[in-house]
Length: 352
Image (cartoon, rainbow, N blue to C red; front, side, top):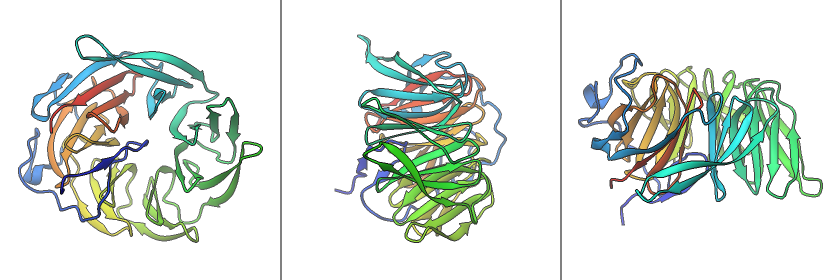
């Protein structure tokens, strides 16, 4: 069976259970403003009116919750309890997708948790919710009612991941910190701090095999998890927007709109010119297709077909506001977009 086999993950990552090299982009794209190979270098200006359907990609919008938050939705996560959104409005909210008689989903608010600061990243693991905050704290909430505050970073925490029961956080203070929980006290202690050779203020973290990829304002540093030393710095020295895993590789989106694919050792396999929709902010891995979804600063979303990495199209999802966050459910082609203005959209791809 050579079909792509996907596994559900919690941080909008698309994984493949088999190895293999992703080919360079090629063929004829189906998107607007496409050039050779489907990619083009244009500005990120809005391409037209907001759409609710993208027929060529079999995409449709179920619903939009206007002003779901009072400020930008910066991060999202999904658990069995529902969809969680974190915002610059200093709150964490839970939403329940509810299917109507017409087959369309709506998002019903169920819970609001006030936070002491704006929230910039979310991670759910082992019954705990971790919220990276503007002031450098990580606020932790357990399903059994316990709470904790992880103090150490001095600027906003932009990424929190978990590897082998170790919490790893990255911050705009240019540091990566490793934390472990004391099961008896349910408190978290910082065991290691990585500051040498970091690529500027940190935006994203991702573990692939035995390496930690640290994305920052000046590119990517690769850290060996065995000795916690930086083994290489990956060009280009550009801001990293997001990272997504696929087929044992990591797809890196840069803020200026280009994409690069590296293997687990940090060796470059594929690169693209900046996409037509312009600067990028987030990536999502959609099980249907499968597709890579790219969220742009002008409110557009680009779609790229996997595994051949072929550009398909881009469409205007938001009315000029940034696509600040994205969450793929991992099933049924469902994904959510978080807007700079606090609005929340739920979409679905129904095609093969």
